Length: 344
Image (cartoon, rainbow, N blue to C red; front, side, top):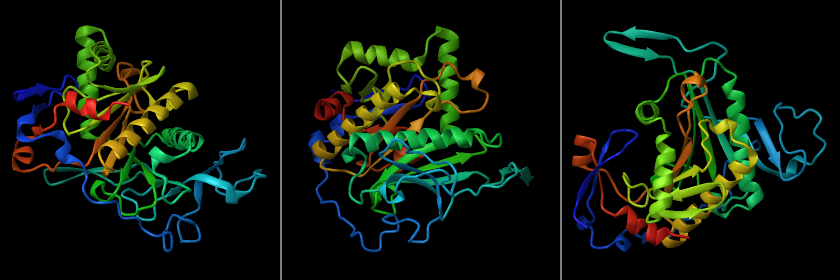
């Protein structure tokens, strides 16, 4: 295909789809093997023994699997059977206080104190990333995400909670052992703000959820659908900012991640696992990031138009002068061809 400039209907951003700049999509397949870091010395193999903070939440694959108090009152099971635990990051980007962040000015600049939450979510197995977790454990991870989100959401000082995963050093992971992060902020991040504004504007004009319209169109065309089940769908976006980018949506219109029922959450978890496994096997195990975009837990009455989802971004290309200078990403793999390669 010839190059095209495509505009994202949510953010309004422009992306250049320029497949002629690459010989073929296969050239982006990872060449080097992933370097496995030994268990010895891993800070997450036995988190508390390694000097990490006590768990905020801990989960095991049994009937009594969630604990909110750090002392685990009333829990009769074997703590050695933990599969997932959440703990406060030893080196947080933001620090929690019992007061809201102060806002002030310094010359022409606006400043908000770095008050918030920064948690680490750790799974037990040293080598199993999300794609390779047992189904029950993968569901426990998202149960943990939701539980912690709901707890943080009670703090009226917080405006937005970001949940994300960095897999591999090129994606920003400094520790090999699979882990996930939760950061809650006293502000709405700019990318989320643009997404909310675009979704709201589309709904104002069309009286429809912009993401539901995208899902309907992708399901009709089928060209970019990678995988779907009864409750969730994954596709390469028509306006892909990165090669092999994938977005995963619950099929039901759900603005808020934390209000998602178990059945719908498990459908999303299933799709995410299969997409990540496909990326691992078909793209030769590249590093990647995935993150959750959801309507914020403040001013909920304003955000019913939104549709929460997960974005998966393999770390395959590098932004250079044009991208940094213009804000226009050049995607050198046609999203249709990317979907063909990743289709499950």
